Length: 240
Image 1 (cartoon, rainbow, N blue to C red):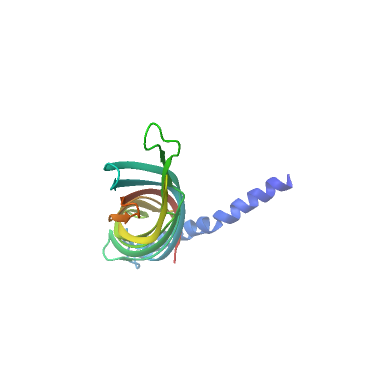
Image 2 (image 1 turned 90 degrees about the horizontal axis):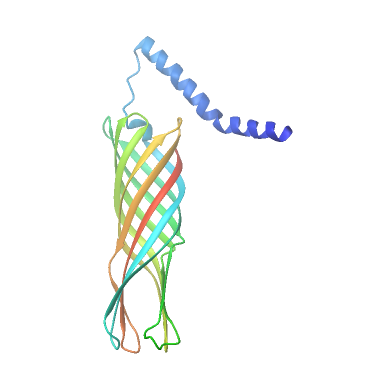
């Protein structure tokens, strides 16, 4: 009984700011209608300010690997799925009734990893392994938002992204790895909704692409890497 009361008390404490915010907003609206002294807020204005948000979701990485040299040319696509966790901070300005522009910076962790294991020939006894992962991303993006109604925002965003590549190549007689930060591009879209005065929820989908990187091995082989990443996130945030 005590535990149930404690849970109910914690839940009420968590939603109390939103309840009071909604009550105050309703009171302010009635007062404004009666006195007709305060201008009406634009649809995009509730999203204006500095915001901090974090979320979790899906990440998928795909690698196009092209190999040439002492062995026949081969091109292979392989990918992996995982979990993404992102933290983002941004600043937004409502420049018109329904329009908003913002600048954001983020950091992201990804667990997705490709695990490509195969035998070079039918008689091979040792497998060749090509594993690729991009655990970390850092980036900036500019977003443009449209608020068709108050407290609801549709937006698109794009900008540069830095991904940390981690590639391991093991084949009979050769073991090699490559790790480095590589710059690429990011483009995405999302939907955002205010749930009370300062809190909001957001869902996004974005796509990252990077230029090619060619690795040369001592045995004369070359390996060209060309990764891509897709991310879908659900986030919660606070606007100051």
